[in-house]
Image (cartoon, rainbow, N blue to C red):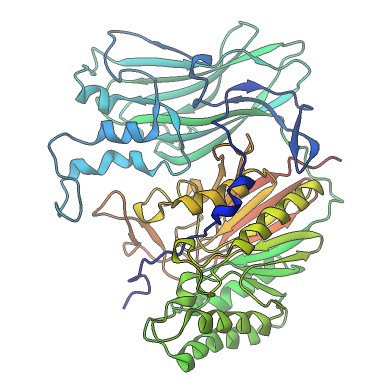
Length: 557
């Protein structure tokens, strides 16, 4: 029986009495911010690495669109709510409810539009498929050529910048996407190209929920830069969508003398991952031999619903026996997962007690599933269901846990520290797969996310999804309504148990990746004062499969 037959997802909940902890306000606007401009976190002023934000949500007028040819609905770049884009792509008169219309008509599958996990709110879209469906003629004689242009971005005094944006692109035949920059009204210089050619930035294929980081050299005495997103296609299909455009200063190269606190990370052992656990621990020791802690982002055990006390403890013992074979095991800091509390025979409290006992056997020294540890100067906050029988609407997360999170994030931000927050479940519309219907956040979950969203120095680690870190959106910068304008960083830890991906039968669902070998994964984290470097590895091959460098915007050297 599959370990994923139960899709129960406990949600982090915030108490209504603490809603006031969340800052009120609307979406951020496009604005210019000096690299030394100040923003307030925890009552103190801190420098920002952001030069300009080209957000589409509240300042669409800052951008201009020019489209050649006949005007038509959806022909050329269009600024639209993300969900309105999905609705426009859903075919009229076709049943797309998987519970009522199975098997679904192939036209229900949206050509992967809905897999733009990192998108939120208003986005920019050039979509020939919808344009043709709305009556536009798109062919060799009537190609679409459209350009989305930023306002002038102040660049005085800069030598090098980075253009960063979220990108969701399907490669149509002969379609070309180009990003250019021009300084002070001068000629355009191409800095990124998507096309069918392998040498293009997209490798000739699709870019699914990606983030592009493009280096931009600034000429001497240049005062302003204009960035243009150009799209040309002569086929009535597919699209390019863009969100979260930012211009920032790059981090300086790491000094050879820089010292980091290193951490080992993995998740979702869940029974089926046991054959990979020993190899994962060997890999983590090889890549981070001086790690000061090992983070396990939930689902230590499989936790079948029929498990009694003896059976559940035995599952923990199976994991412990593999740990015991390791000669160099750092302190374990685990988060509780939904599989750790799945038994219908045991009470939630019994299962939480079993989890805590396992954690303490390997050095955690905790008394409950939410806690804080400081490892090598790095604050690590772990969240999770408590098993205390609280109001079901709070999903087993007490008022005290929410108050704890808010207070500790405020404290560490005042210390200008990068903070690692870990919970088993990811937030909706963040990392890979979280576009799925089963990741929908309730009001209390959104409140918890908004608390984290106030702090751009937070790195939030989650498991649960089993989606591979090979995907472009394994990490994402997440902005919340009323939160910090730079958002927090969310990272998907993958999993040791079976890998999941998009469902072949339902565009809003997921399924196990049975069409190819599984790819168990593990991560290392190197936390420096000014940045954290996270690397993802394939446990079977030992190869690095992804990497992200996350700046600490509160750091002052």
